[in-house]
Amino acid sequence: MQSLVYRSVVEQEDDVVVSRRRKLSDLADAGIFLSLAPRVDWLLPPLKRTRVSAPFIPLAWENLNRCPSLDSLKDECLVEILSRLDGDKERSVAACVSKRWLWLLANRVDRASPKKPLLDLNVEAGPGDKEDQITVRCVEGDEATDLKLFAMAVGSKGGIGKLSIRSGGAAVSDLGLAAVARHSPNLRALSLWNADNVTDKGLSQIANRCPLLEKLDLFGCPSISDKGISAVAMKCCRLSSLAIESCPAVGDDCLWAVGHFCANLASVSIVDSAMVGDKGVASLLSFPSSSLRRLVLRRLAITDLSAAVVGRYGKTVAELILADLPNVSERGLWTMGCAGGLRRLESLTLAGSWATDLALEAVARGCPSLKRLSLRSADRLTDHGLRRLAGWSPSLESLQLEDCALVALISLGESLRSLSVVRCRGFRDVASSAKLRSSCPLISLTINDCPGFGDAGLVLLGKLCKRVQRLKLVSLPGISDAGLLSFFEDCRETVSLLKKVNLSGCASVTDAAIRALAELHGRSLRVLSLGDCKRITDDGLAAISESCVRLEDVDLSGCAVSDAGVAALATSAAGRDSLGVVSLSGCGGVSGRSLLHLGNLCPRLRGLNLQFCLSVTDQDVASFQNGTGRCDVLF
Image: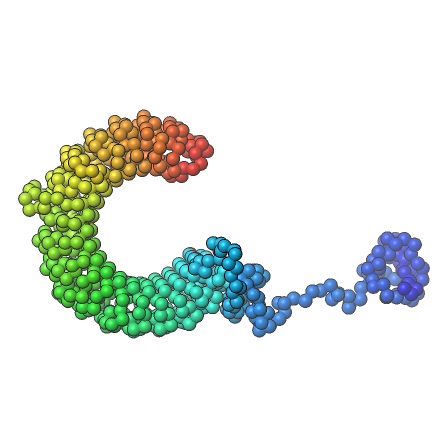
């Protein structure tokens, strides 16, 4: 170092004074200059009392410690850099840098296809190494945004396999869908709910970049039309399931493309699409390569012509749902049954007044493989139609009647295993069994909210259906102990005993019927529901505790039980070994003492309902949860 001249700083009356060519003896006073470069010489001319307010720093030194930033690069340069990232982990880390990098990775950088290394046969493949592993993602509500889709598309290892978007409006657009398409070439299933801003452009991106798409669900997408769905049909030849609901811009043209290009199509559901007519349904089914197995047509403007086309060309259809079709009449349903093309139909659901006796008989004749039949709002259906149905459907196993003008249950098929009658206001008891078959292999019986059904009908069903294992009698004021005692006694004669019993809303049922149920079927009963049976007391609960040794779920909501009955239940064999769910909602006689018994004696208890139990306090529930943290309490 050459001669380095230091300046001495002298404080004099709060002023800084620089002396003439005088070296500083104290290095601490000269600390502000020690950070200068070692080869810099300073020579200050003689000055006379100069005030110094800050140390002198050359302007060139301000940029010595400044690091260059990639943000100063243009998008084209940054895309070139980001495209060279090899691996999902590196892309995910880069996407976390800023929103700009995330946007570029999602929209400007294609997911590379790295070369797969040779497999080491000496190493066993782990669960993460399987090629058939599919990434499933679902975004709902406020989380359904384009930015969220960017992050999911870039961060998912190998891309997204199944994606469900339940948006609340305009938060998701074509940009987000394009990012998913760009980074998920192996996308198999896509569901869009209420995506107002997703148009044909975004769906076309999926079609162009996701050729393996197999399932497409569109619900409430007003901006998607025939053009977008046609693009998917032409580019995604593996499409096997298509669901369209509340898409007003979708019409007949896309159904022609789906029927023509999608040879593997197995399920189609079209609901509430006003522009879909007979032409679209005919185009969908009339192609020789059609392999459709499931068809749903609801709330459409189709006519009898579509029903006839379904009956003629639905040769591979196994499940058919026709509901809320105002322009379809009895004639259309009769033609569908007589066309002879539904020989493989196994499940049929009809909702509408056009399901009459004549039409139903034609359907039963034309569908010999029919196993499950569901009728809703069939106001013109009578006993004669049911009798003809039972005669022409030898393989019928399940029958559901809802909101039908059913007069009486007069015929049950020889193979019927499940019967459900819901809200049939005209349902009445049958006094004679002369017209009925001798037996029926019924396993599940449900009668719900049928005011005309009483003890006489229940006694008759008990004599005919002695193999019932699941009994559901809900909101039947005409049911009393007499009918239940006869039914329980008849079901006891066979090896199969009752396993699930639901008597909710049967206000006339008392402890006597429950005691008979426990004595006759206690060893097989697993689930018992007695909600709003206000005449059930501790005596009935004591009978349940003594005999029902395998009880797993019991509902006593609204019953007149108290702590004594709950204590008996908790100390029973079922309480110690199998009891898992107990509902005591609205039981005014239940207090904190019941929680002590349940907590100490029921080790398998995992669910407890204590709503509207006024005698139970917050402290009781807190103590119970502290003692049994495994049980979920609804209070």
